[in-house]
Length: 72
Image 1: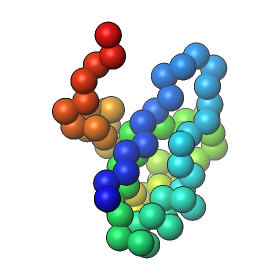
Image 2: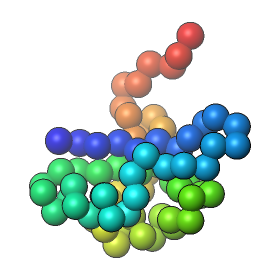
Image 3: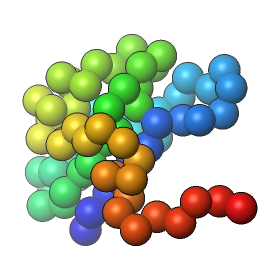
Image 4: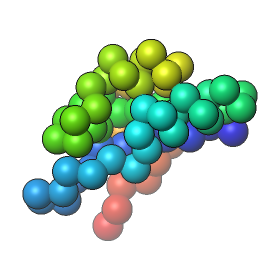
């Protein structure tokens, strides 16, 4: 399975959908995890922590979710 973790776009929202520990567990179970660059910016988890867990950091939401349709 491919799991994508986007950056939160809501004002003053600092949470991230998946921690590095969660990413590590998913990767360990054979899944691919993509995390948008700076998704965790205000959550205290640097991109490097996700990379160490085996996730791939991608620059934009369009890379995390290829083919994603914009919301109306």
